[in-house]
Image 1 (cartoon, rainbow, N blue to C red):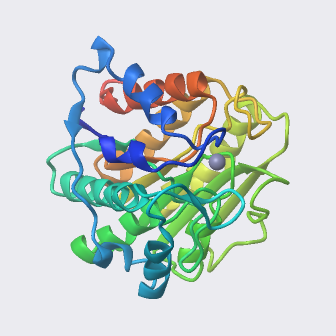
Image 2: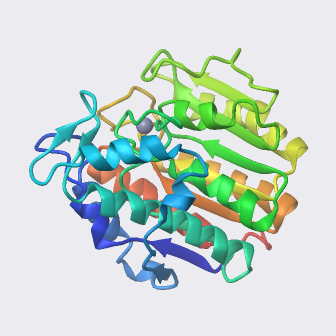
Length: 313
Ligand SMILES: [Zn+2]
């Protein structure tokens, strides 16, 4: 497969302070893992800076302005007790938006089959008018609306296997039937949303997992709920909020996935995309806070994206 890999040094300059789990070392550990010879086939991309126009596809201008005005000239500024701004945050956040939008361009014009965007800050907790949960702008939601606006897509699915519910993505599309948002997440847990009764206009699918659940329950929920819904919806583009904090070694949650579960879900999502939308998948990093587990999980996710499934089906 022609798989794009987006990374950029700017993502390291979004500083969150000593001891913060959403740290630049996350990307250093991913970069190191993906420098192995088996990843030599990746098409490495240096993303452009995103634009305010792209961010406005989800966030109002006053929200953008408020974040930019709060960026400190030195040190850190806390938007809430865990969402931090530093002098490099604008470059990083705009570069993250640029990465996912460039991936949309490349995949939808057939220049690549799929893409993984190793971005910081993450995005899925960012609501249209509220930065929270380490997230400033909602990268994957912006990508969805960018694809709808630029390529007139009528059905886009976003699958979110981060261990936390993507309240921001849900909020962005709660009344929009042409975007399906499906999330598996630990519940009860941060941010508190994601109950199965939150269904939007039939386009929101929330699948809670209980603390201690493993790949058995995770795979059952995808097999019986999320994958069938995707097949009925028939997306023209499949986006993934790829958080790896449901790993058993992650310090921020209590789900017991292992690397092979991330491989499985990636394969299953690629299979849906093969059937519905010529395999078009764009995956963007969200959480994942044990550096070793994150690197190994991203590696198997990206390796799976690179693997041609035509002979498997
Ligand atoms: Zn998370």
